[in-house]
Image 1 (tube, rainbow, N blue to C red):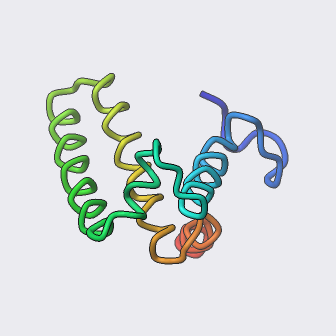
Image 2 (cartoon, one colour):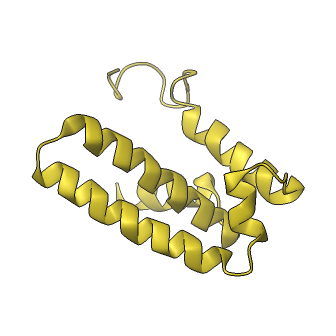
Length: 108
C-alpha cells in the first residue's frame, strides 16, 4: 500500500485512478445500455434503483459479517461489491466522484 502523504497532493497514480475508471465505465453503461452488461441492466430495469438499494444492503451485511469473522479476503471482496453498488447509486442520482471527494474534503 502506498503512503497517501507521499508525493504531490494532486498527483494521481494509475492505481489511484481505478475508482475514476470504474465510475466512467458505470456512466458509459448508463448512457449506452448494452444488453450484455450487468451495470446497464441496473439502469434499464424498471426497479433498478430498488435493486441497487437492495444490493447495497446485502453487500453491507456481507461486509460486516466478513469483518466480524476477521476474513480479510472476504472483507476485501465484499467491500469492492459495496463500493461498486454505491457508485452505481451515485450515478443514478446524478452525483459523481467529485461530489463525494468534495464532501470528504469538507469533513477532513
